[in-house]
Length: 173
Image (cartoon, rainbow, N blue to C red; front, side):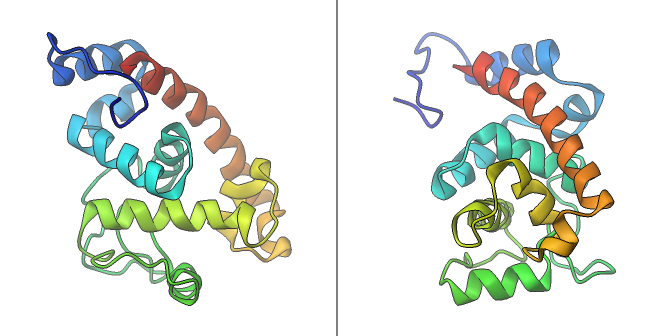
């Protein structure tokens, strides 16, 4: 079984299949920014966090339009770092739980894994419903922040992006 829980097509080129699936199911933003290697890294990070690959891809798309090098190694205005825009509160939580991956500031896979773990923690450790986990990721586990209008817009965008990403992941099976 492969990374996404499906047997690979031994006679086919997975990169070609990815291109076909991306052309069929990806929008312009995904076609511009998502690469086969990034897609595979997202699958690996999602598996580590025990979440669906489509969830991580939708979250990554919400965070920075699937750009793998966005802010790797430098801080944004809110202290966020990397493709998943890991913020200082997320770093603190992941550190407390012993989950912060080494190299999360400079390595795409580690940054994706940190984001996936933090997202998974929203439902798990903070008892936030899965239907609000993306909003909590964006607004912190403080209910006043993830139930607000901005966080809810983020959740709605996540839900829409996840449908597209689920189609892409399913196509790769």
